[in-house]
Length: 109
Image (cartoon, rainbow, N blue to C red):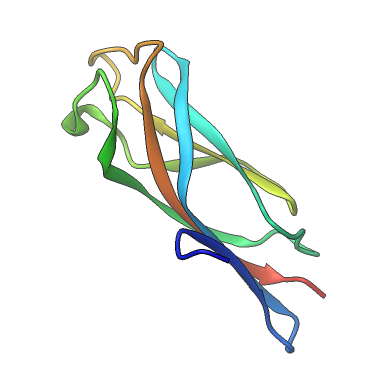
């Protein structure tokens, strides 16, 4: 697979998947979110790490008005990733979007 995304299944039963361009968009005035659907399903809930890509995208709240990215939902086949604004700061607008870089690791067998 490409450098921006991929999935490796190891012989010891572990698997790691990544995507550097998962798009999050406005979900409400206070949150942007999006789903990362894993290329292959895990047999148990994986460990997820992700970070906000500040090189592309549009966000009405400035970077300094955002909270740390967080996981809203996590399953064996997908994760819902979110970013909120600090309460009382500028709301997200309809056209707001950013990319997040995601890495998932867990068991495939």
